[in-house]
Image 1 (cartoon, one colour):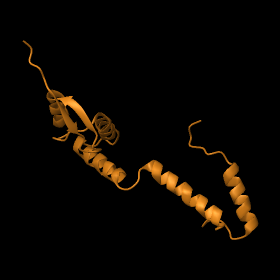
Image 2: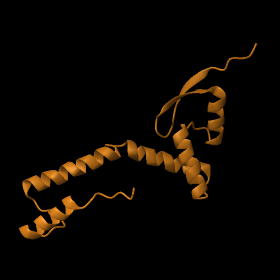
Image 3: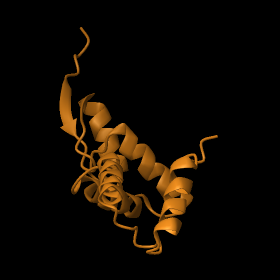
Image 4: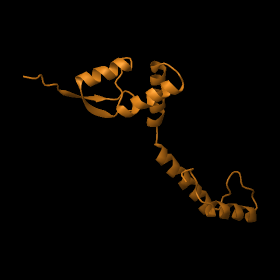
Length: 125
């Protein structure tokens, strides 16, 4: 009769994602990452960073954990972009010039026209 290996729910020490894994798998991940359990995405990021910077795994884990802590504080990236766009629209609706724009209304209108007619490019062409 084969021994049945039970799965345990573990939480990533970087991002907090929970996964159900076997004890053997959890042990292997913890052995590789100095006693910490990292989810698949975080572990791949750490491995990539360690290889790219030719740094030790422990240093890459610390850097990735700091990055994840920064992302968990406050709103996420999408929320920050949305809030920035809302602020821009509020300023436009109130007729206030942008900080970098001049105070003359004709140059402000030209700047606004150029900004609204220019395509949004994110380098995904």
